[in-house]
Length: 383
Image: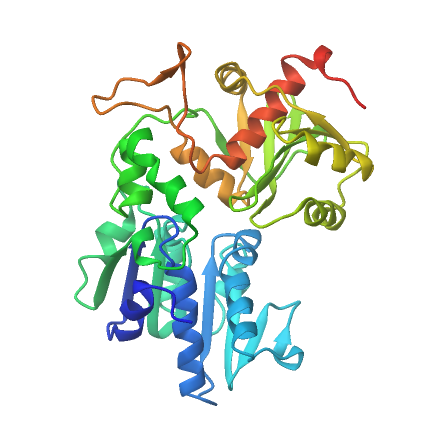
């Protein structure tokens, strides 16, 4: 099945570098993987190495790696004999796909590859790209949402004569569900910059984000009290965030960020993650049925306080650190902002400022956890 415009863009490009800039759900990643799989089919036993790269391994597993496995399965190309699950490699028609992350430096700086596909390339530094580029002999393909006003992609890659530059939007993806189309198109009235980036696929402009005080950290301290925040989703991601309070600061780590999860799937993910049944999980109170099912499975699931304005104020009142491997959470926090009208004035709901309701699943989960746990613990009961 041919997915969208991105399929033809990448299939026809003859340049060494192919830049795929686009809005959300434009089908960039899926289409690029399709093209690479079809190339292997038409060039059997070429012995080429195709590296698919993202900033972190968890993000890679939930995006390009999952798309690849879906494509080979749908085409009846999958065989256990060719799949090394522990190494995340697959031999497809005598060519090798390897799925690697930037936090695996021995693989990034290791052997040469023929083709390199960098998913969400704006997560990488210029040095990350340079190391990949000098070890790639034939072609570099990148995709990204243009949420950064300034980036090395614009300065270093776009001007090159050996680069093709393509822009796609959700309208270029004919297989997108109507519910998701409606969600994207709501951005027209919600926020000009989000519509520019995620709706039209155009480069973002400077804006004031809600959280500016946060910092990166390597990992959770492992010395303080921990608890969880859970935002539920299906067509949009379910997000599970671990919080730890240590020496007056909050440390956060993304544990789960995945679409199409039923409650049974979510419980299975908890088991795989080793989530303790004693740890407090502050959940989206708009989903009482799901919370009750988690409780019946033995988890300490609790309803959260969803006061958005006060919740944000509480988060902003504390030093905040986010682990480097929390890629989806970091992406969200960089673009999480208040709604404004066309003149830049805040849009208020019941006299309170209101954030843009888009790509905020990890932000909601973090706020549920921090505000409910630290601001009003006496109102929370455990059933």
